[in-house]
Length: 235
Ligand code: GLN
Image 1 (spheres, rainbow, N blue to C red):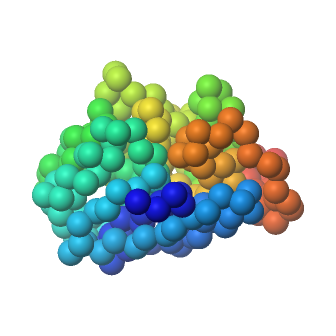
Image 2 (spheres, protein in one colour):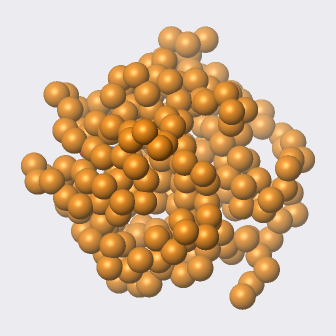
Image 3 (cartoon, rainbow, N blue to C red):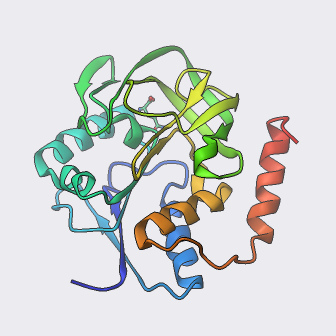
């Protein structure tokens, strides 16, 4: 097995909207900046999920989302990854399919049951800027992203929201995303980790066991954050 950090992008052929691929590029770049060797692996939906340290799952339209859930349920590689406390970062459709059920094309679909949550359909499509105060226990600045989803997500008692909504809808207009162990789900596209480099570094710290990572030059991500939080009326 390689000693490099293994970053697995799950099903880019089905789940990759609004630049979610950038999450893989940003994680790999921020790891290499710290001298951490990285392998990135793109796993199509007709391939078995390999061993990984970090799994990335992106957003998708309803049809591909339902197919991805079926294939991941049959594969069980993501279940094994969660059992051994690998890091999972899941966005929108990828987030919804971690739960017990979600809706796609009007039909209720089985999720993977990896996190105690389920998604139903909201009264409107949530489209636009999304921002929220991240759970203080994670020690991160405000979450910023772009959302576009019809689903609404309801968390079970065993898990915590990632953030409290300041702009946009997120899970339900009050909370956004989920945090459970080393699994994070969010409705933030953008890609999320370009707008939230501290969140990228949290995933890297979880995956490597490093307590802190050298501070990089974040001039450009900081400008991007300021611009997008300004667009949401938050600075
Ligand atoms: N199909 C899902 C929904 O509309 C997820 C959309 C997305 O990933 N952007 O709720």
